[in-house]
Image 1: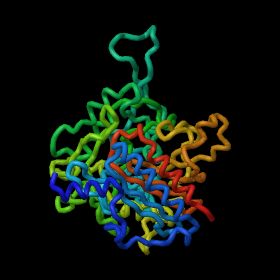
Image 2: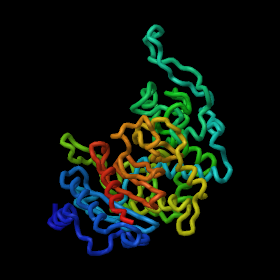
Image 3: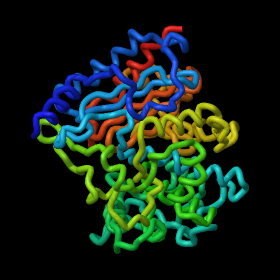
Image 4: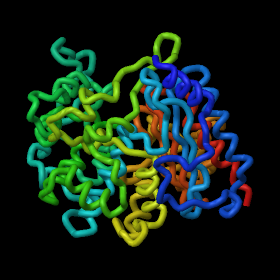
Length: 437
């Protein structure tokens, strides 16, 4: 590695220089923490916490952002966006945000709800006939087991509705859970290069359900179906709908399904934990990355977007504002309130944990005092207010929005899987401990 790159890499690993404005921070509404009831001294604790992960080579680098009352009070970068090249992490680094796509897709469909295109109680088969007459896999009693299949098929006791899609209560299969995961794995693989998401959705509709619709919360690719409904109802490909109806109005220029080659110099590399948990490269920021490479025709509503921390902040601030940002109204206030309330009752939401219920596209923090079945050690991962909503990405990108404290926090790095890391929970706790008003 050339000497100048070695010097840059050393500086980044040690925290780099912050004497000049961070690239990518231009245009963000800023304030001193004390102006919005937060402590500069306490927010400064975020950086050493990120540094500890960096020192152990568990992450390549990270970008962190905290905003309150519509003003960014903390924006920091640390480490490298590409360890192999020695390129420093920057505030305008572009990340794979994976399932952070889901809330955007859910917002897109609810924009069409506001235009009168559907009711949440409408069956999905009204637009996608393949979802008519769904079948459910049920365990075969031992005395009836034939040795052919471990389950039998029965008719679903109700149709799959749009509400079921948005709340992940369809019963649709997904790995690693459910009796029909083998069938799911077969249909989720793209069959040909020119395939669209609609082709997948039609195959997916024929996979037997693992539960009757509405009976259980189960993470799946239901939001791919949501995205395809956006395409059907709007008459636009999902990427175009996102761009014209959400990203342009909100001034999110770096959020897209496939990164333009001219922006590769800001694209982060992606890593996975090795045997010793130190990061190993899995996806280099090159034209061969699946987030860049053509054809650009397969748009997953459940994942696939790339974005920057400032772009996603603008999306979250729009939600916190009740559907509007800087004069651009995406949703009505009551629709935002409706989306971010719990729609799943007391159903266990196994992926985020027992602290959560689920709204229309978001996990929502419960009032844990009223849940008798929760043990004390499961009372919640952070000091979130009741009603805080969130949904993170598979490569350890993570936002949360707290309507009570008017607070937004976002941390982005590129490591997946990340279950061995507590970086998301620690960042959240560090954000809340800085509130002093």
